[in-house]
Amino acid sequence: MKRLRYQRPWLYPEQQAALFHQQRYGIVEASTKAGKTLGALVWLTEQAMRGKAGWNYWWTAPVYSQVKIAFRRLHRGLPQKLHTSNESDLTITLANQAVVWFKSGERPDNLYGEDVYAAVVDEASRLREESWHAIRSTLTATRGPVRIIGNVKGRRNWAYRMARKAEAGEAGMHYAKLTAYDAIRARVLATEEVEDAKAQLPESVFRELYLAEPADDEGCPFNAAAVRACIGSLSSQPPACWGWDLAKSVDWTVGIALDSAGAVCRFERWQQVPWEETERRIVEATGSTVALIDSTGVGDPIVERLQKRLPNVEGQKFTPASKQQLMEGLAVAIQARELSFPEGPITAELLAFEYHYSRTGVRYSAPEGMHDDCVDALALAVRRRTRPSEDVWSLADAWGPVEELLR
Image 1: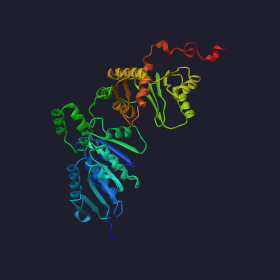
Image 2: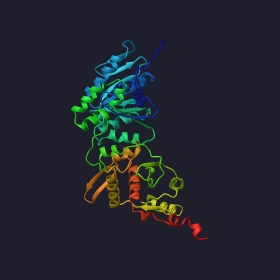
Image 3: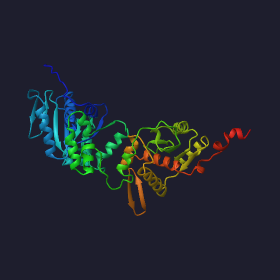
Image 4: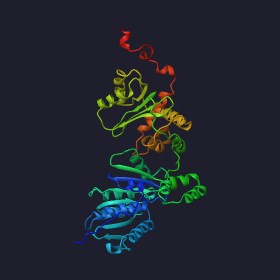
């Protein structure tokens, strides 16, 4: 059997890191012409090279014309003697007889039934969610990996929700962003071309297409530009106050501390640990600092136990009215730039957060399938920080340890 030597085409570092990793789900939000398509074609081809005769690998895009562009690029890029192409079926069969299929997502029902060993979902923000459901079903028996790539297109689509889960560190997921300026540094795009696009296009369109920043859809209470203006590094100053949101079911327990200037200086986040361990971690992190803790439902007895050990802990029950007040206070602090927080889960949740008007009032929450634990913890910390100073008075602060008073 003849052995072939393969050398990966050149990819710039950010492009390669975005796609070539060990996580099953890779989500890439990217600028136009930043190299996401080329990188994903290389990734899918390498997956197929490791396959066997008859194994299927899919490239799916929203419409037929987009699928055909990717098919022709791979056909041109592969040596003719190492593959056979069928333009009517849009398939490329490699030397090992693994087959790369290029499929349109226009009809989700046509995507069910096959076993697929790896897949790329191109222009995911424009692909119907039902098509993603079908693609995911084809990866079940094989446990195949998938790369979900594309420009951003607002916030009300399944790809945006997936990206926020990955950015927040969901297990098995990897998130990457490729901007036009990454491509400029790699000499894939010219600076003058990007600057010309910036001058010619509306700001929201430029940010989506070249910076991979979704435009504001109606319903976000914080304003994306204001959130981005508050992004900074994690402060090294000591905590002045804490906000803690306790996990329910598959949610996260999140603790956020603000320093005296309103910068996030501590960030704790964990999932699925016993309540005893949660209490221990909160006690260890909070110490004698003032804290406001979610006491809704199962949180009520936990806060009662914590108050026996931590003199400056208070509970906050979430009701529609109290949550509205908390979120309005957080929105005011963000828009006044009284806060700063690092990029990552906090920023991702703030940008995805929504409110809806209903017959009974305003409802604040994360989009379906996403988390808002960081938002809640930050709002609690802001509420604790903006309380009048007399609210945080305690015997320990005024007179010293209680044990000394009793001597």
